[in-house]
Image (cartoon, rainbow, N blue to C red; front, top):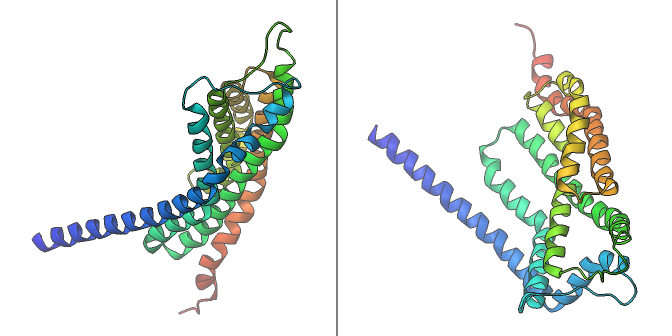
Length: 257
């Protein structure tokens, strides 16, 4: 019993050491990318603020109400961009840590899911930046009274933008979530099809909570969420067969006794 406890403790400590090593490697790359991008922090923020600047009246600019806000906000944005750029390496470190404890069929499942989920998240962020902001910001600013000078605070703007990025990034993960639920047997595909009406209602409720209180932004989040749910329902059976087929080969080719 004492030997088993000692072995378990040694295994636990070795896992902690391995986890620390993976975290350090991931953080080191993020830091290097961040330092390389630091000289361009102001320009990176200008790119992030471009959709709002284009929606404001000619000659208008955003404001900074804090003393050090003009310095901290571009740094914050640059750090987040560095994390996004380093995401493949960070996910690889996560994969390298968990892979030794997975079965072969689980490895075949997780690798494509990690890649697809990363691409879908970035696609959701890009959709929000290039399409949603280009429609929502002019729509909101056009409602501003003529007696009001519209000059958004950069701190509030970044918080709003990050919230929208996360909302759309997670929304675009819906097909992956559906695939995982079906592949792992957590929820039958028939059940997911059966609850489709509730998903549609839930999509509009989530959109109403996350997005600004206007119809345009709510529709731009709710409609893709519903469509991506349908895509997940279409792809899930194909993905399930593709991942389970190799597991069935040995039994089908085994010689009878």
